[in-house]
Image (tube, rainbow, N blue to C red):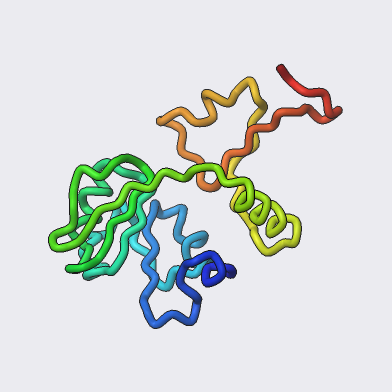
Length: 157
């Protein structure tokens, strides 16, 4: 979130409350990324968040439906998980599909090299395990990296 303002997000000085949600094990990560408060999706009632301007959903399913109820009139529910099956009352629901953009990827790579972007790596798997690494039953917090070369630098086919 350090570059949130530059990337079009909310700066840390924003007067808005940034509510983080996730499983209990995600609490420290969410707070470390700038969430001011945290709700456990399994244990807490989402209605404790009150009405919000924006929900950014990455899970879909039941959580997407429960989250739509929290969006205040004029607010937006954004999801990357699936086309929205619900719409907030007096608000809008948006499904975002990220398209590859060479200039944007180059910028992100430079931010990574410069230490201005610090992704959370949850797991590194060899190429031959790529399909199972992203299986629905598997939950890994952070990014899953698929390694396409072995330690000696030989490429896998």
